[in-house]
Length: 322
Picture: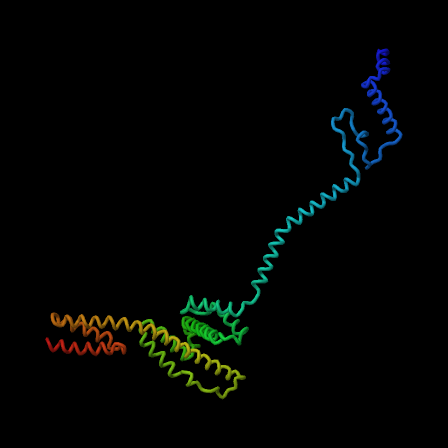
């Protein structure tokens, strides 16, 4: 064997030379570690840390490369945080912009359109729903050409509120009713009467206007408005004036509805008169009963005076024929 090994060494066998070289390197490395132990924190070369028989060589990492890697990871983490915060920040910015936009005061045209839209939809209802818009328009745009129209709306709102206060007081019993002025009591009576007899309600309201109308208001009394008695007197006069305005407004609406009702009733009574006239030749008793019914039901209604007079005339003629 010794002869063969020597022969191979002499012939330059590569395998034998590699084994010899590796053995020498290992002995040298062992002596180096014994005399120079490794320093902590300093990376060793791949040849020093590579275990025997390892299929993959170890990577050599420097301090600078490790610092660059940590800096890159730190940068990525900040980008991730910023990305997560971007959506809620954008939402908050949008809400802030919307709040600023909504807090801006409306223009004169916007206020006017809002008021008119309410009056167009609820022309016969109260305007209290847009009272703030009406007051804002009048205070901010006193020189606008539409001020006169808006003041009319303001007056209507004031009358609506007063009418509701009167109705509440009348429903709350004698304690509240005793605080009403005579004009206010008359108005409430006429308003209630309108449900049963519109004609009588119209007559009562007209009498209220004639008796307490604006032309009959006395000048300020002998009390100064700076005194308590003077303020009370002025307040009563203002309530009287407002009550008269309520009565005038109620008269307009009652007369309009009464006119339509009268027109319909007159047409119906005229048809009944014609029917009674046709019956007079064959059944005079039935015709006479119809004439008497017209007289009895409508002789108190001024709008039916002509029909009642004609019924009396035909009734007399029918009795003569009997």
